[in-house]
Length: 230
Image (cartoon, rainbow, N blue to C red):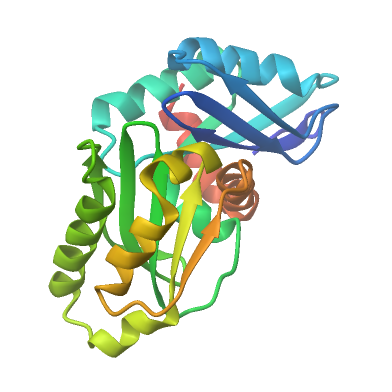
């Protein structure tokens, strides 16, 4: 971790197709968004500038990305973060961050993250992601494709259908959720046996959850990441 002269800052970043949201453990602007389609090198620099920190400090960042992000894409994010002055970078699924940013019960929970042109779906049990998929938008069929992917994932889990009835959570930007249609999403998810669908379009839920993951990540893991990412 940081040496005795450095102050540790935990940073959570949610990477979307058209918006980067961040939530930090401190700084002049602990929560902020950056709009536009930016590459990792650019948005990591902008996020660091927005923190307006007084040195010396060490930044340990957790970045939430859509399910299905490739290893090469993950490496690009890590390199960009290191170039921006982050001391270590942890990359996680947006679904895990969404779970940390809200309730944290242990039951199996369907989660849907809606973003521009792509959605992440999966099942979480506590803090474990037990099945996930990434779905690219098919105009007019987005809600149906989300339900189909969840159905396929659920079959792989070999769980009782009764376990689904605790409800699903849909997160993402409000305008994108509305574009897909809340009624359509509810109808398709109810077709899986889900009795309740909760919509939480809080733009900072994923970033807040990523920051929570960063804050509770053990010192030994941050040290390993810091050494490996030099």
